[in-house]
Length: 103
Image (cartoon, rainbow, N blue to C red; front, side, top):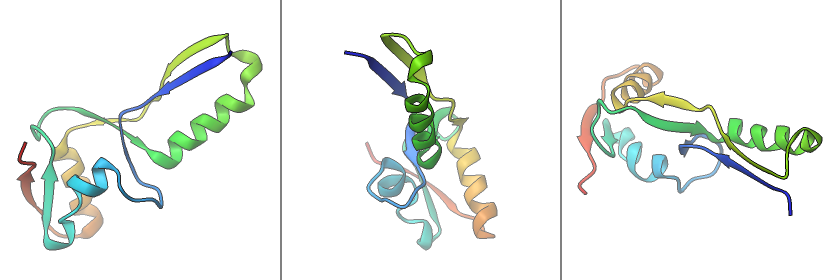
């Protein structure tokens, strides 16, 4: 059986809900709070879900160029929660309070 593993970081974006990003990171954003799941200055890998889906499609269209087994890392976004918070603030046009997930 041909096997292709497409690995990615945590997901964000798209029309669905229920991801780590939706449930923790931006859950309180309308109240002005960005919740970091870990140390805010630590780089974390994120994958924009619509781009990840395009990656799957691209792989499916190019099966003749892959081997029997492939493990591929999806090039997502390696950013800190401080970077993500700043991007959210720019998009919203206002500052957000930084909060942390209680582990």
